[in-house]
Image (tube, rainbow over all chains, first blue to last red; front, side, top):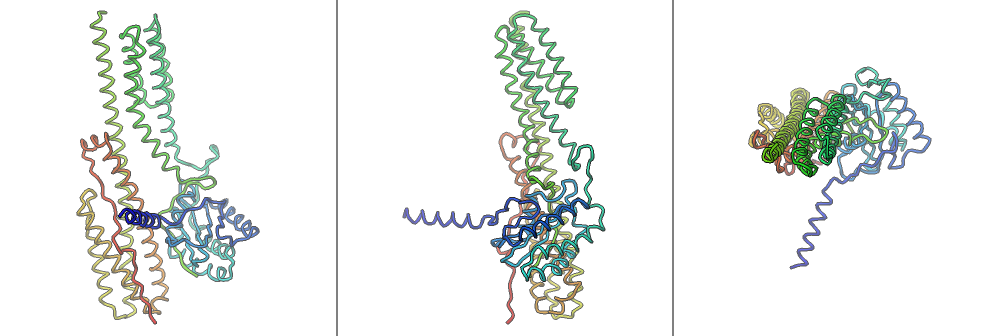
Length: 307
Length: 199
């Protein structure tokens, strides 16, 4: 009986593991990630230079991945997964292109990021792939086929000015979401000021004389800092808490430090809730970018075929 | 100041702090739920867009196939009917029934389409037709987009559902009427495309 249970549990476990997403997205190795090892070093240099040239002239980001097999996983889904995980394409206009070649499966897929779907519609991508890849791939010349495909795709991309991302000369970076970063900064200051208010209440509480003076002084400092660095609402909250805590500290007598500590402890719990929510959404949006790619995303555009 | 007054002020200060804490907790949670809910709506409209895109491709496809006077009127009719039904179905995101109906109608359309594609295999002239090839590529691309949109929608919904069900946020959710949203389930055998071998 017992042994039977173990065996069926084992089978269940095996099934669960096997039916989970079978293909692991490899970490990228520059523009060309040649897992299947079908591109020689000199060929890879030529291909990388060409991709770099396309990025310089049109700001599009291109990634090439060769694998032996997609292990039963749909090559289209692999391409989107790779594109989103590596974050191919500039964040602001998602102008990424991912070319996946499964050598043993004899399958290819070209995925277009959201921003490239206009310049390279699925039917065009299909035609380019079906025309350019097979003659080269059948000879084992994978980089040659890809280069030919890129040449044709360049013609179409050149017709669409919207794929070019805006480069901010001052910031020396592409125009990412500046407003969002500002929001993060405000939240950070809010936490800093709240902590300062909490700490200064101890100072107020433990002072034997001039409590009111100390409280007034430190609250003014916090007010000024708050006006400079954070939102009105955050500041309003901090000031009210600060004043209340000081009141509690002062009126609770000599042992005021502990009284002030208690009320500020419960209030900082509530706020960490809402600020940690904003930091968790930040985590998920930056999870796509890694190293050299711009954080672009893919919505399912592109086409594939066999040779 | 008398001792009683001092204690009184102290208590009021603490109660005020507590009240403020509760206020900000509710506000913070409500705003978070609102933004997650909007995320769900956005993800859903993406799904709807891609299904609509598929529906829009179909009349062209049907006409191209008809032009080759093949004797598969039934299969074509099935596609046209399934498409009409799918485009008519309206969805209310919190209503499990309307959501399930939507999924069923779209899945029926998918089956009708794949049966049509199987039938087309028998007609090499049609298969080689440039127009047909383009439509086929676009259709495949749209199916990919639908798949990605559904995956993304499910992820967003999972996020939202967790937020509305976890304690103590679920109290706020209940107060303001945030209902659980529906997930896309894969129907059994939907991935199986019938393969017909011709000797």
